[in-house]
Amino acid sequence: MRYRLPPVQCPGVLAGAVVLLLLSAFSGGSSTSSGLPTRKISTRLARTKYGLLRGVILQQQPVEAFLGVPYATAPLGSLRYMPPVTPSMWKTPRLCDTFSPVCPQRAPSIGNRTEALLEFPRGRLVYLEKLLPLLANQSEDCLYMNIYVPQEADFDSASLPTVVYVHGESYEWNSGNPYDGSVLAAHGRLIVITLNFRLGILGE
Ligand SMILES: *[C@@H]1O[C@H](CO)[C@@H](O)[C@H](O)[C@H]1NC(C)=O
Ligand SMILES: *[C@@H]1O[C@H](CO)[C@@H](O)[C@H](O)[C@H]1NC(C)=O
Figure 1: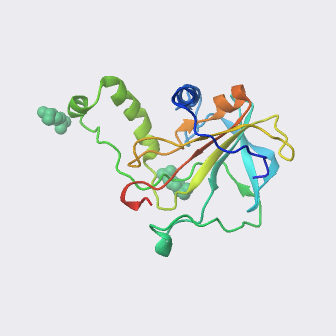
Figure 2: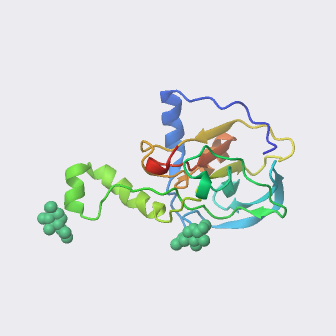
């Protein structure tokens, strides 16, 4: 992107905790099928090295989001198990209004609550019950990121600090998609990026 991004710094444990608090997973309010609050298509375009992007304006926060932005060529066929390859360029503006599928994974089994409670504390189970439905749409074509930008940012000259949130769960499961960066982007006046990366046996 043409934002002048500062080098990514690994947040310390404390900074990481603050980021986690502000990254509101599963934001409430009226949601669309993709899990995000009501939004409308943006009228402006953001220029990237690979082509133009059109985002969506999130209504609850003054934030423009670019969902499902490819950061690599789909790691399919001969690219399976290989290091990521840069994406190919696109010629017409790319509408980034929906999350990409998540990478193939096997999330914890919570179908039987009684059994699940033997394995997880109740709070963890409640969290998993909200999270796992968001991980249902899986595909090997999953190398996408979501970018949350404060709406007042000028795409051509903005120079904003950027938080890249790398999701947890030990390279086994999960996705960046469920972690809505809009509140952090709006209140912190910074760009928030969440992303998917390959997991488990299909990971690098
Ligand atoms: C899963 O993702 C694909 C690709 O983005 C999309 O076409 C499809 O509608 C999604 N399926 C569901 C059930 O959300
Ligand atoms: C859930 O697991 C418990 C303990 O293993 C078992 O007794 C119960 O029958 C299971 N319930 C269902 C609906 O499968």
